[in-house]
Length: 159
Image (tube, rainbow, N blue to C red; front, side):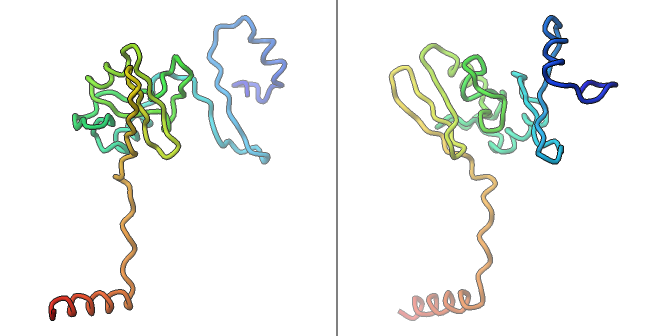
């Protein structure tokens, strides 16, 4: 899509922009032509995404055993190593842990369940589970479950 012109064939766009120093972002559409996704090559998380990561991580550093407040939103798998700037690959870290993970020999990658897997220079592997901040409340008890609960409590008190 060329602003002020409209849709342009991909081959024409590649040819026209082969020597240009411009930023191109791919937009993805469904078969009906509705936008469904946008490619991001940005290294820094956009403000909205960074705010989402801080909220998702509960404001606390994702490193195991660290309960310091988040100061940096950074990639689990380094951007330089091909890590994408996406919610799945971003984590909230305190300043100390963010600096430590950049030291030689440290590796991190996102797990399939939202966890962060960290490998130390000595080969130890640590998994930081995803925060359960957004775990939904259990469904309310049904009338039958309430009656059963009361019967169990009454029986325990009578014993």
